[in-house]
Image (cartoon, rainbow, N blue to C red; front, side, top):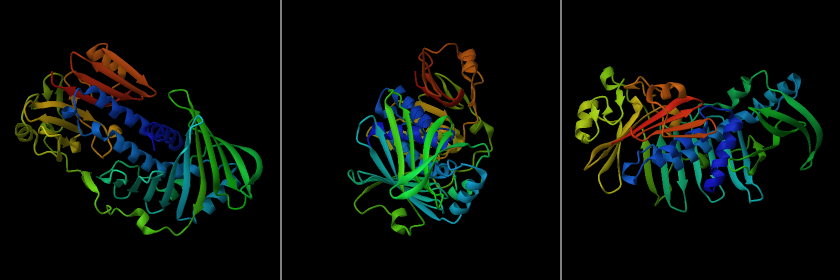
Length: 409
């Protein structure tokens, strides 16, 4: 997928899955972090995951879309009962997604899903992602670059497609359309509104299974975007190799994350930290060395060296924060975050700033504490605040603080 189309795919999947936090919101939060940094050596690991998470979000959203597809088939209680009965007997589904912006050539993704939590999404250029939601695991493979990324503890939604069907909301509504022939089949049509978005759904008149779904909207540039989901195949025997986590021979492998989060420290002085802009986080002050950081906070969950200048990203995700340490300048940046803006599973940061700002705080509360920001940017449900003199950035989603970033003065 191209960068632009991938963004629109995630945005549409957000609407289709009706899931919070939205994948698009996550991507934007990460991009905001990346833009706020001045030089590559100080980019936190989370910020560098932007493109990675876009693929993970898209792959994860495969499950969300698959789960949502069947909520759309709700013509009446009787018809829905038939849909439920049909779906409960299926164990796999494959289909095609096409995203088209204006008159451009559509970007196509093929999807394979099993009822045991395994799924695969493959782009037209050969890139593919395999996800196991039961093990919080994802593998993204890029054949052209001969690279692979393995995420352990990937932040993918725990959605069982078939259980989802049993627990659909009772207030879903659909308007019956005139039936027609589609690829030689008699199909039933429904106009469905989900989370404010209009869809047209065509289902096989005999099996009540979906055969074709369409949705249209406009992207941020006010260009029309069309989503088409078709070529459904249910209960086809799928090759286990499609869901293999084996890395192709000769590929460079990058591994991130851990299978299980370490237990959070019992000592609140190492967990519920007070953050002071221009100063530091808890006992850690800007300029401290890595050894001093780990002496004060304990060993990081993981550490990754970036670049050739000795910059290290210390991952304290089990406590909800990340610290960037330069070999020559010591601690230069840190961020306190929630699960909403991370590609890997973390625990939400449980501390607060010196003025009482904690995750979940509203815009008004932040402004009351720190005054009007030097810059405020609003993108949909996302709000980005910059306080230049404090070298501090806040990110809010739906008026709730989800990320705080602080830089060395």
